[in-house]
Amino acid sequence: MPRSSNAVASRQLAYAGLAALVLILVAVDCNATELQQATIAAFEHYVKVAQEQFSSTLKADGPFLWVDSQPKPIRARLYRELRSGKFIVQNLQTYDDGRPIVIPDGMVHHWIGIAFVPGSTLKDAEAVLQDYADYSRIYAPQVRRSKILSRDGDDFRLYLQLYRGSPREVSYNAYYKVHRQWLCPTRITSDSVSTRIEQLKNPSEPDSADLPAGQDSGYLWRMDDFWRYEQKDGGVYMQVETISLSRDVPGLLWWLAKPIIHHIAQQTVAGLLEADRRAIENPQEYAPNAFGQSIDASADPVSPPAR
Image (cartoon, rainbow, N blue to C red; front, side, top):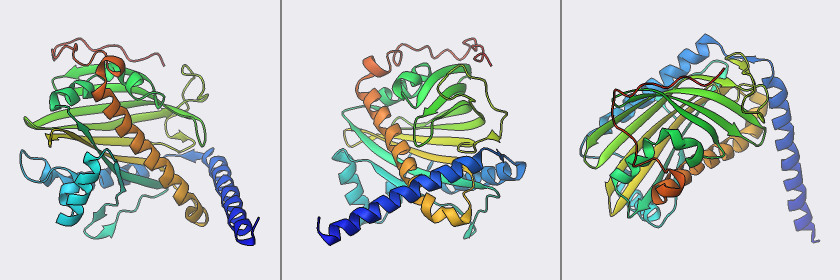
C-alpha cells in the first residue's frame, strides 16, 4: 500500500479509536448523571425563545417553512433539491438578544429537517399525522410502543416507547402533550412537547422497569418536535424542528464527541422524514388506521401503560 494510503488508513483507525474512547468515557460518566431543575428551566427557556422567533411565520400566508427564510438564490436551489427527493437537514442555534443561551450541566440539540412528498395532499398528511396509535408501525424500530392517553379536540396526550440500538442501546418511556392547528386549507402544524421521559433499566426488554426520572445515563432528558406541513407544488412539504436535551459533554471531550453527536442527530431527523414520507405514500401498509380514525373529541381516554 502506498505511504499516503497508509497515512489515511492510520488516521481513520486513530479517529475510530478516539470516537470509541469518547463513547466509552461518556457512557461511564453518564451513569451518575442527575437532571437538575436549573437545567430544565434553561432548556424550557431555550425552547420558548426558539418558538417565539418562529411564531411570525405561523399564519395563513407568507413565509412558512425554514427554506422560505433563505436568500432567493439559495431558496430556489433548496426547493429544487426537495422536489428531486432530497432531504434538507440543518443544525440550528437559538440566541437570546444575540447571546447564546447557557444550559447548565446540559446540552441542547436543535435541528430542522424538510422533505417533499409529491402527489400527496394535506389531507393525506394529516391522516397519517393523527394516526398516533400506529406510530410504533410508522416509526419502527425507533418507536416500539405508541398509545393515545387522552384527547380534547386538537389536543392530545401520548405515550411512546422510544428505542435506539447504537452507538449504545437505550430505551425510554416518553410522555407528550400534542397540539395541532390548521392555519388555512393548505397549512397545518403539530407541536409535541415532552412532559416526562424515563429511561428503561433494561433497554432490550420493553416491559423493563424505569430508572428514576432524571437519574439515568443523561442521553435524553427532553425531546420536543414541531411539525409543519404545507400543500403546494403538486405535493406536500413536511418540516420537523426537533429540540432535545441531554447531559453535557466534558469540554476536553466535546471536540471529539461533536461530530459523532451531529451524525446521530442527522440520522435521527432524516429517519423521521423518511418514515413519515413512506407512511403518507403507503398508508395502507404503515398507517392502516389513518383514514378510519374517529375525530370525536369526546372519545374516552385510554389508560396509561402499566408502570
